[in-house]
Length: 421
Image (cartoon, rainbow, N blue to C red; front, side, top):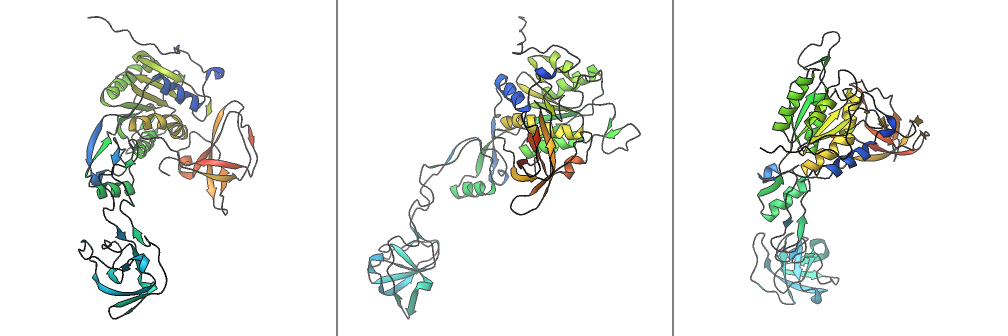
């Protein structure tokens, strides 16, 4: 059998034991390089019931199957009249009933009572609201002229037959589900949710259900990353905690790649003696490592790789670094698999205190927001990557780009919310 050549990455990564700052990429550069080398797109489609469609990503275009409404309808409770006959007195010829049309045709001196949503009878082209008429017996008086079409929803006033209403890649909201129901679309074509393997590496980790002995910590990253994946529309698949041994990491990573559409690993991605992930990913090849190390704080040891088209994201082991880097570099990649654009919820705030960064680096500054009129105060918090509680104490983060070395108190900054916030 002919041996298949392993495709080499455009920028081969040599095994090194240190990061060279001058060669590191910013988070945005790293994502751009990854997506340029790997064609990551939505997975195959499936069909779900209308009730299960909210939050899913639409896989095909939705068009109106007819004109909506199919007949002119009243936008008010009142009487249907011929506009050209106003002002004047009108003989009331009965009532328009909801859910049916009337065969009666009105002449210029006639009117019919009509509820909101009722079909406008033939001969009428306007509706006069109840509060604008005076009724004496079966005669209604309209004191002022009304324009043709007044308080009438015309044919196709909402949707026109063949009109494109929803595009593929749209994450369906409750209003979209209501629209699909109105169109009679009860089986919805959506992209399959990608399954992402979630692994944590470290001899010091124990499952959250266990008591942590001295020197041990409960594995919080596996659950935080899994929660973030669900917010994006992916399905996390958790694996056992990895020991810091090459064969253990390699075997687990191969198994996860076989089961899943992508893999996220926290811990073991740096250049220390116990950091096994880079060598394992490079050993897999096809292409292996694409980016290793970022010019960022926190999260320098972040790794981006792939194997046979399946993304591999190596995140730092520190809890704050892991979740911040997941949002910075993993979320855009996972969103490409999900089939929906990655949109960071954000708002504007004013810095409550000055902040500094390292020239040439991207810094993520966690902030706590305080209401202060139209634009909240953004209080910078000390960045402690090891802290598990920091992410729960913050409302979001602001990003100091490479040339943003010093920001004064009072500066208007963009505050990005964490996923799910």
